[in-house]
Amino acid sequence: MESYITPKHQEACVAAIKQIVSYPSVCHEGENGTPFGQAIQDVLEATLDLCQGLGFHTYIDPKGYYGYAELGNQKEVLAILCHLDVVPEGDRQLWQTDPFDCVEADGCLFGRGTQDDKGPSMMALFATKALIDAGVTFNKRIRFIFGTDEETLWRCMNRYNDVEEQATFGFAPDSSFPLTYAEKGLLQAKLVGKGSDKLSLEIGQAYNVVPARASYQGDKLEALQKELDKLGFEYVVKEDSLTVYGLAQHAKDAPDGINALIRLAKALVVLEPNETLDFLANVVDEDGRALNIFGPVEDEPSGKLSFNAAGLTLTKDKAEIRLDIRIPVLADKEKLVQQLSQKAQEYGLTYQEFDYLAPLYVPLESELVTTLLTVYREKTGDQSPAQSSGGATFARTMDNCVAFGALFPDAVQTEHQENEHIVLADAYRAMDIYAEAIYRLTR
Image (cartoon, rainbow, N blue to C red; front, side, top):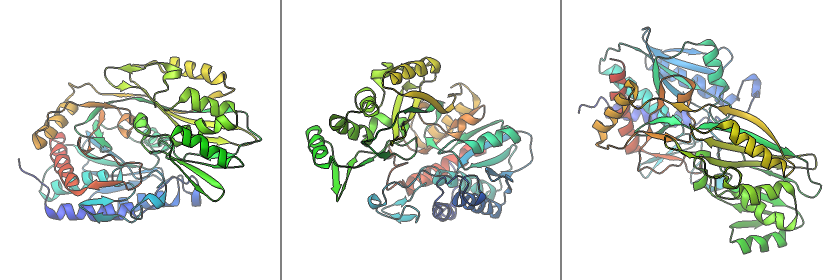
């Protein structure tokens, strides 16, 4: 099958990824009068400047929440839903390279956002540029929407949907091939209780990351080491502090991670009885599914519930546990909340909802799904079925949108981890798939 992608487009895409990754676009709400931070504002402007240079008409929200780049003026709109913000880099000492200096090595591009979602966004963009260069006439308008708050509260897309037109259909290049037609409900919540005069802990970063480190400073270092040794948990002691190590994973894959917060709680609660630690250590536990709270929760379209204890703040004034829960599309969210609230109350904790995203579901027989699946299968020979996911992509912000690539089924998933990277050969394959898909969707 003919490919629209040339070496020139590949090189230009790599250069763009390197440029966009260089912005440390982690949320710093309100910084310099911007909604989500100066670096996010800067990368949004730089991306739109790049798009303008490729021949797109561009627009930036006056409040700085989002921007878009589009081709054409037809009524029907194909939306390509991207985001330019990233999660924090984590432990820089574990990175082989500077997370915000995108480096090419061993056939890969390393840097925060290469996989989620700056790299895939540029792949789709330069796939479209290849179509332009080939002289393709589009029968539908193409609009790249660049969000800036995907890793936190999605306020960018909330504002977009308040003031902009809806797409006819679209996809988010922020997941895996072949495509994702169902995404679990995403519930983020806090459990709040009384503080402690004996413990002071601040653990975790983003809600959607399994905490890979949990640190303790206090007068029980030696005893804590003994408890951790009994449990076989990995830790490091430096001077007057101890850090328990786990394995970071996206919250949608919480069972595949190793939650350092839970591991610290299991050891520390033996030495310092505390209801909050007890809840984490013995109720939440390490299964990543909160089976002690809900029992098994699963449905056929989207699989099992995942449960991430993402963070803990424990001071003399309060205890606060931060949770990220991915709920199967057919499960009863309110019933699950009731179960969680009741169990939390037994440990002196009060449930508070922080954010909720309803699930996504686009029928397998829809024209969008069948077109994208056909393109993927023709280009790869892989007959894998469309899939469901615990991830949350911008596809669920609009009707008739799915998540489509850019991670291949056999690729290593490194999003939200140290040494995040993409394989260049895979990036070029994805560009080829995106070009053909965009061509067919705009006929």
